[in-house]
Length: 195
Image 1 (cartoon, one colour):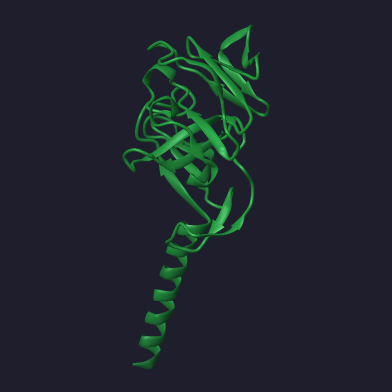
Image 2 (tube, helix red, strand yellow; image 1 turned 90 degrees about the horizontal axis):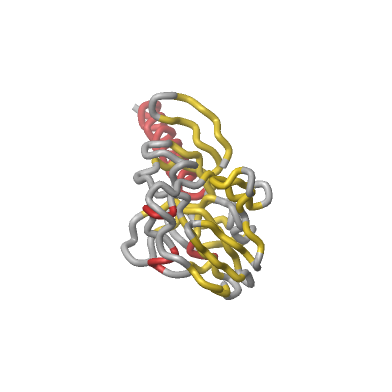
């Protein structure tokens, strides 16, 4: 009987550790909408690093160790400031940046991000956004300055994304995970596409 109880406790500890690890370190996310097309497709499964910006106490939002600030071009996970729905969006501007968005294409600090030879791709240093402008560019932005410790988030499907143009700027500490890569895509199965 003691052996059975010990096995039960061991199993319970393993399950608790697994849930704590998913709550604190890494998890996966399924893309619910087309707001990040063409980079992400509806149904894509994405590996998520929950420690990219800080380490939190398991099952809470209490940060115990701060790591990095979100950077331009990163794809991040957050809860919508207006509805609480989980979102996946791209960080397009950080504190101190000046942003203009015309016809769905960004300029940061006066510099266009699009490569004229590939007009559907915006380049954020090591990150690239494959834009979908099939529904137009959506709401435009004129010379918006991003305050310190805030970010502007947009979807790559600019004309079909409820993003920072609608819910406003987001404090850095409201972003709790960075999307690392797509590991599963419908119709293709297992893939590995870094974001």
